[in-house]
Length: 201
Image (cartoon, rainbow, N blue to C red; front, side, top):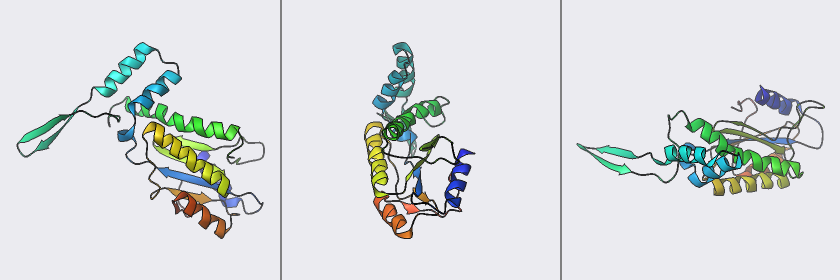
């Protein structure tokens, strides 16, 4: 619902000097790339006890894989990062990982470095919406804020192991953003422009 209202707001914002952008991220193999040290750090940050952290990380780290090849199997293969697909615990652990990105965005928003959208007068500003491995980031459509968002994503990638597939990511703009500004930000971010008719999520 919030994503829909935000999209509607960008469509009907035809006036004003300040335009907005919505960056829809495509994460490459999100579960497979989770760095275990980052996950453990997030568990500590949220105040989980050492005993609980050891149990969780024990479940995460004890996975092994084997690959069938002709009449035999190759393995066991012991991974050094990632979350198991299909494990009922994995989605919850991944939410903790993505909270790292959320914290970075909130920090920069509180410092006045980026500005989210307010879909109505008096409504709180929204700088990001996160749904599992789908992420939608909002910021003012200018070179400064787009550069800051890209730096935030770089820091998040370096710490968490996540990789943004910029080639498959898309950016939406409010109607009042000029064509030249759109083209400049698309080039800066390294993403594709999205038609307003496309759905965010």
